[in-house]
Length: 84
Image 1 (spheres, rainbow, N blue to C red):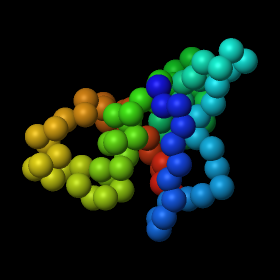
Image 2 (cartoon, rainbow, N blue to C red):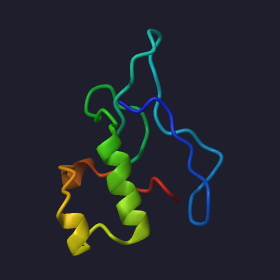
Image 3 (cartoon, rainbow, N blue to C red):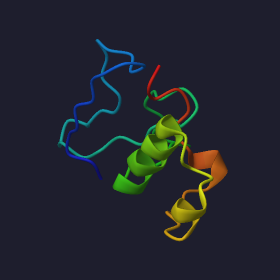
Image 4 (spheres, one colour):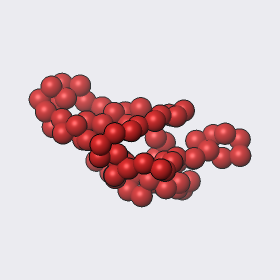
């Protein structure tokens, strides 16, 4: 799981938190489409999810060099709208 990360810059929507923990400080699964908590059907947000979203923001997700280093994030598990 991701402990915490901070992103800022052009094209990144600010003033929000994505993800949550429960009363025992365990990660609550996140719905990759809404980015809201979803204990039943959400995903455990991991570094590869953030890295995939960064590749998409940079426009290099489909670049041949990126394809040499697959992240293994299923299309349904990509974090939609993370940046804006």
